Image 1 (cartoon, helix red, strand yellow):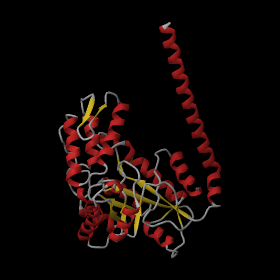
Image 2 (tube, one colour; image 1 turned 90 degrees about the horizontal axis):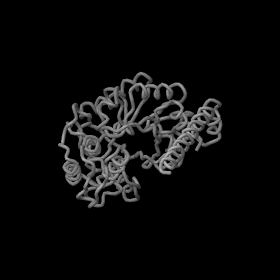
Image 3 (cartoon, helix red, strand yellow; image 1 turned 120 degrees about the horizontal axis):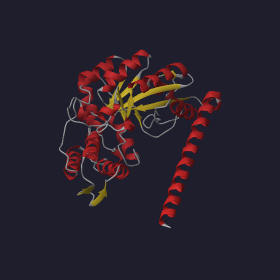
Image 4 (cartoon, helix red, strand yellow; image 1 turned 60 degrees about the horizontal axis):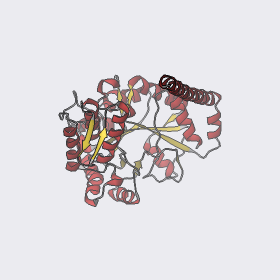
Length: 355
């Protein structure tokens, strides 16, 4: 009876997995068909004028090389990114963030299918790998820098946390800060615990943030380490992007979710000090901002919106999905993700225009 039951359960599990795979295949076919027939574009033509802003982070020739540090969710292979830019150049109209602002002010009309490209965090590969691709296709972009990491050998706090979870030999994580023990004995459980660690660190800034990350490394019995090579840009490299005509903006000092930073002084430091340091090093005004979203919701609040305006930013991008249409708040600009496969990438873009 036990054998029969086991076989029955196994068959049911396989049938369920096959059903899910079948549904996913049908969805892919449907998306490809809608793209090929132009149905989404036809629907978008009935919608008011809009721009769509894409979000990228890291672009690498071999993303798997640093996979213990930079997760697949925020990195694109160079060949994938190049294909995306080729599709934008051929099937859409690349625009800058400044052009979108002029559109929102009623001072400029945007071409149909206007697409802007943005990068968060300030990874060095943005300059070394992504920028040459952008130049090849004459696409302007906006790069948002985590000021506290400029030129530093250390990795961002979220990369250090990922590295600790990816390299630990421990089967559990006993968090002294959360007073909870997490199972990390298999990849699924480990990923759940990693999300918990991100959520724990997301509201923290400066020394408190670093202390929490160091505690995670100790609890997972992982030595604090530096990446094999520098991950983040320095100021001269940021200047090179600005000189090439790209927008360079702030992504805070230490990359918290600022909507969850409780103290006004700490919040002001992330918004005002990052701007001040950038203007000092880049020798010009910095008016663009990107809200970090390492974990937790919401990403912004009325309080952060007011302080962003007070700091002197004129544009800020979020991770809220959707197009940018007339009437949008320039300090709360929507963006969309950039899936890797061509059909998913085109689907996300064309669907956004039709929303």
